[in-house]
Length: 461
Image 1 (cartoon, rainbow, N blue to C red):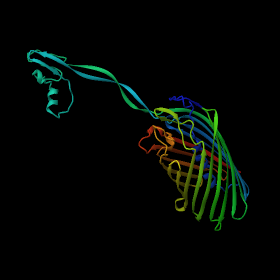
Image 2 (image 1 turned 180 degrees about the vertical axis):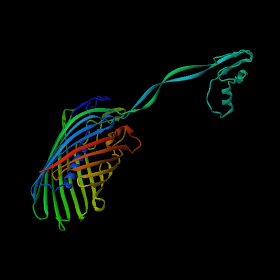
Image 3 (image 1 turned 90 degrees about the vertical axis):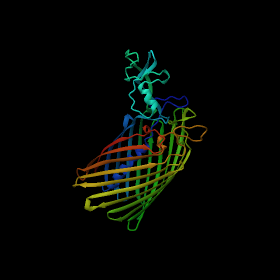
Image 4 (image 1 turned 180 degrees about the horizontal axis):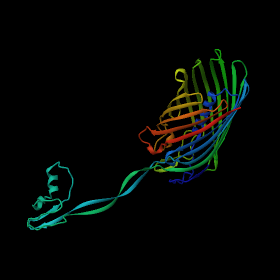
């Protein structure tokens, strides 16, 4: 990973900054898998896609081409290979608190001039204030000076002494330059990186009721490598209207610590219990439960925090337990020539983060060759126990990464699928991604908004 220093410096923190894009890659992979499940009739096909992700204000940009190849050798045996490439560039927050910004402003002021007369002195004011709350204020506006027994002025700008002599220029203008607040600036780091990921899957039906699926994957970045294995058994019964899945996955990651010229490791283990129920030919219900543990180096080496007025690297716990629950419903509505998909996902972990995700999509048939899919997704999460915008004292764990703050996001978009023939189709999608703080303390500028455009197609053999 090649990075450039941004607008913050700290001797205890390396000048590099990393942007983790795994969630985007997972999201893209999920879209591919959904497409495969919806178009699984072909015995052999190739999918190709390109995703362009661009955050506002010139922040992160990701260009991600991907492919998927699947071949069914027999009804009982198939293989699948998919890969993705990420080109990453732009800027992302370092985690340091926002820096106050100031601007200079020129102010013109009217200053009073004291005029002498035989009967004493008085002060003339050029005051345009409409306030009339009390007698003292009213006297000042008229230029009355009780101690000098002066005659009130007849005009705010011109004083008339009792001697009959006229004194002009009783007020004068002056200018001064002052500094005023002008918002805040979010400390950023420039980022460039590439990522390559490859996954291979083999599915084999070993009996009338059992279908085994095994997969392995490899992913690499300049300072991050990940390998993993998974195994799943799909058990069908009730005349194949009910499928229960049992599975497990294990991942081993190696992280190169740039500032220390050393490496750390991270291990992830997950267990899956899933259900697919065909309620009728037009309705499918699905649910799954995933329990997992992450241990090792979970800290983001490029994120910093302000601790006792100094910038230091963040420090997260070295172990996390997680639990994910998911339910989904797909229903075909023939009278509308459409299909509705809805889902709810709940996530909780030992970091103190709880999240809720609601998704709804509608697949509308337009004639025989066009499908339109509007979709919307709502997401809300609580903050991690160790999150804050700055820290004092001697806390054990601390992070100012906005991704573990309390926040809410919404994404919405439209996808179009054009079926050119029984073997070829094209698709294009646009999604808008918006995020905001919900904790009342994190600067809104930390949270990006993004546009996502995806173009792809499939060829069946």
